Image: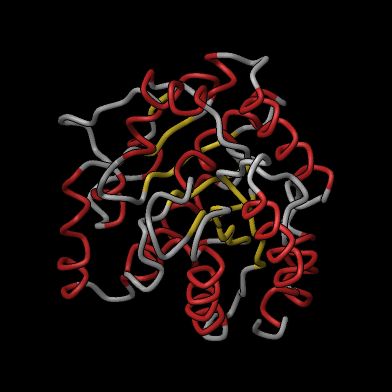
Length: 273
């Protein structure tokens, strides 16, 4: 089981869209995929057409009030979901009364190791919070999601500082990958920023970039991955390519890539622009 956390220091970068639709693309390739919603806004939960009511959610799992397998629900496109609700917002206050609060997610996911190939964690837009710390401690790979828009590179570098600082404290460091999103090839600025991302992050940057797509927004509104809504659209094609790239890298299998990646993690060593 390989755990990927999708992170950034700001909202609106396409982070949830990336987590939901990569989960859908991997499931379409026959992978056993779990999506964990760690954002109190619960956008990933809504993007899979779910609204938690009286059922246990990720909040109860993190607090030790429910097992992860008891809180799982089946989402469209063959994706399993550990949902969130607005009540997750009080988890940070609750951690003041907990020992080892930042390891709660890792402990909760361990019994699922033989059940899933990939676990994708949609993190809140705050890299330095307790929820994101839980995600990164549970992760084999952190995916820094960067929109190809104004000030995106500066924000990504700030997030990278926080990730690098946390990574140094872990007994099992995570690898880092970077994903460009909201790309509009018609604009010179977006093309130049994509080149800057290549220069800054090197091999850590996925070759696949996610283009702007109306169908991606429509899929979220309808509560399905884009592969379910329109498998022939360019949004679906982008995520199919991203899933193929991920699996071709060998990082989706047995954890060997994590061990190799932890030593290379080129983005952590690249000089600041």
